[in-house]
Image (cartoon, rainbow, N blue to C red; front, side, top):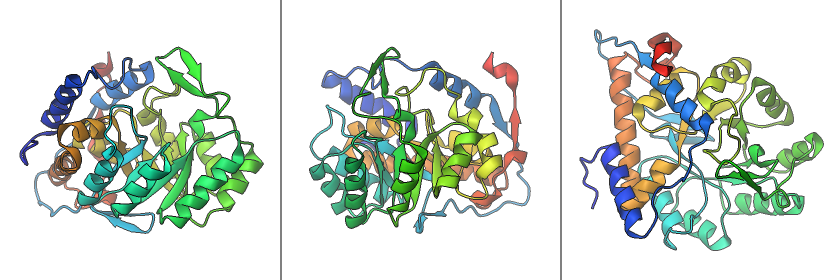
Length: 327
């Protein structure tokens, strides 16, 4: 049982222990260089404390016509082989109980329905299927089931990278032409998210095609070994389109301090994936809720210590970069 007082590290450690008991030794056998670099960059950023004139902190935000309690969300997730049949619904319930949302990746109808039935806010992220009718089918299903937004993983245009070397799914996934993607976006009434953006150029293209939001993401270690780390790509993207659409980010974030650094760099919300899977393994939906609550509590404490009363008050003026920390 994960206790109320458990830290983020303790929750994740318990999850790893439980996964080892069923023969799963680590979520990812290999961490891509881009993910390692993202970690190093995050660890080179420090914040300036401003302890006089204390403020009351509000971590809530409005996103996709929702009022969320926290800027921490569940990145697009699919049911992994070792998850129980209720695993996806358990994650959704934990996220809802923590006042946030879940993004879904590849999901079967039963899991999708189970997630919807929890009442959690759901975002459906579809893959760039070569058979475009499947894309339209999934978008229609998302609308009919009450999803709050939809989107697409454009970083899977050229298949999936497994173990840093093996490319697969190129027959299943493929690039969508500009006109096709514009048509896809226009066919839904829901906010459309383009996930996998790592350049200002792609961000501007997403905006031009009608996207409401982007996720700056390296897709963990599943896309490219040496794509620009999401945190390093973020500032230019925010400078280019940050005042015109919602800019979210994920890949390699571990705690509330990481979240604060991302928000200070211009992101509006931060996605977690691996940590949520570990929290699920630690204590089901309750573990997920406690994880998000702890990350949010860490964020709130740093906001108070830096004089940031709400999320819009967090900006790059409170961040100092120490480059030698990346050596």
